[in-house]
Amino acid sequence: MVNCLRCGKVLFPLKGKKKLNPKRKYCNEKCRSRYNSREYQREESYRVKNRKKYNKLILKNYYLNKDKWASRTITNRFLKSLIHSEKLLIKKCKECSSTEELEIHHKVYPTKIGEIIDSIFEEKIYYLCKKCHSYLNKKI
Image (cartoon, rainbow, N blue to C red; front, top):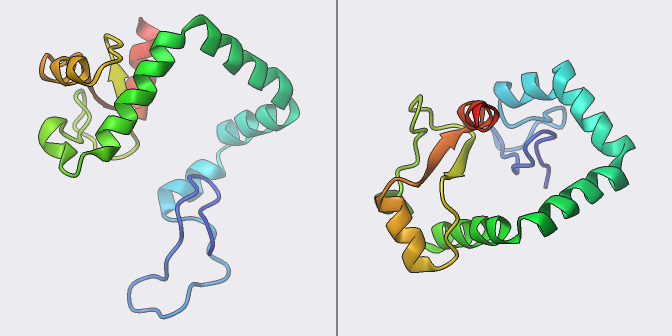
């Protein structure tokens, strides 16, 4: 089993082919171009060189915001456990209507399932693409 170097998805043979090309390393052209970009390489090399420092920053952030981390974890597990989660939360970026690289954005951080459902209906929890999500977080 071979995984994409950037996103980690399992690679399957292309349509009409029986075997996977041994030279293939990425699931699509977008992953290939992003993996080879200088920005991604810089970020990845920083993580590798400063792994202990990076992990300490993540742990520090976790201990300062335990409720937020718990809410994110519970929301993700809840949405993955639903068979038809699309009916509850549309898998489309709220800002640009993209369907790729979606992330869940929280305006509030509920920790109970009932509160999560209410927040989704009140549009306090919704999907954003990676680009819009990072822009919105920088703006806030």
